View (tube, rainbow, N blue to C red):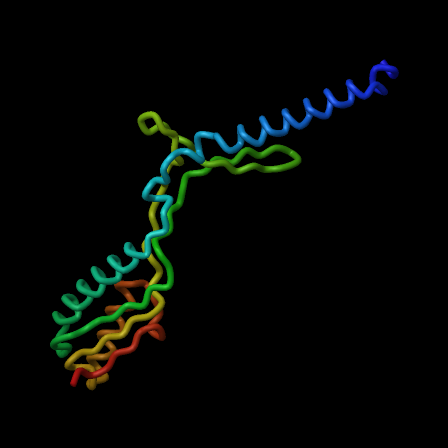
Length: 164
């Protein structure tokens, strides 16, 4: 065996076999099913969804605020600090030495995909309200409390001003 290893032909064959094996491994990683499939819409970051969420929320807040006594006409602007967040179901395997998390995979037709557990709405970082009754402190307090409650944000993230 030692004589065979010392022969140049054996070394060339061993080196060529090693290179071919590495090429096959590299190509198998590149041709995997995951890289060929189209990303699902949930995989794509969508800033449009945050804009749509903000516009819908602004519209609903305007309608709600105009119903509060003393507010009158109102305009609302939301500042969004993130996009929608997709949360996928996970399983956890715990052994004495380590724990391992993995996504729950389901079949969707001929494709496999992670099980979507929930979608978190974009996070609101601030709200500006301009309304006809914005100069009255009692009206402003009602607006602060209404918006804070509706969006689950602190009142220091809300500003109310009088409409001209």
